[in-house]
Length: 167
Picture 1 (tube, rainbow, N blue to C red):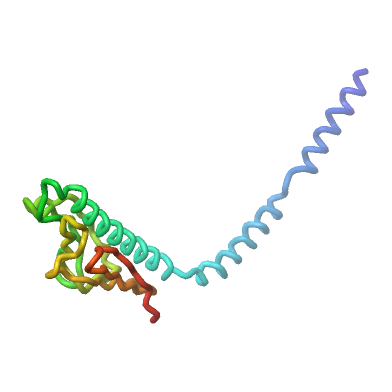
Picture 2 (picture 1 turned 180 degrees about the vertical axis):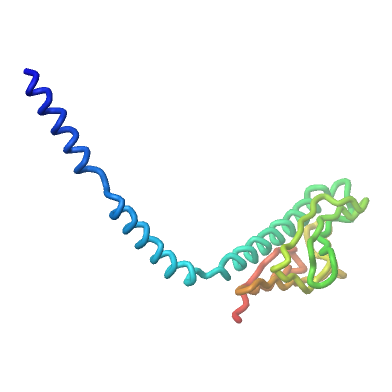
């Protein structure tokens, strides 16, 4: 019986050795993965990251323009002047604020990343009916490394639309 037990232990040790990887195999796999990484990394399109930032700024400004319009409509009963989205900093703009036109308080603000260029209209004012006031700007150009958008507001309705410009 004792001999049988030793035989089993020896078989288990042998099976463990067969399942393990040698140092040469591990180094070979690491070397192959390193070579693949050296080939793949230079092919990454890092401009896509800036393009994503441009998309983010576009969607943020679009959302906040719609928010300013919605605030003007919702608070029409006690605010007869409305709300505005005002770009801050010189052109190209560095940020923007949503301003309550009845008392000039800032309801919200945001910054624009340095690698995204915003130019064009500076002040977008919405009346309590949701339309764009006559003296307001109607368009904004948002550009990043690989993408350019033109954001426009329909004066009669205050609807915010954007289109991608082809370079």
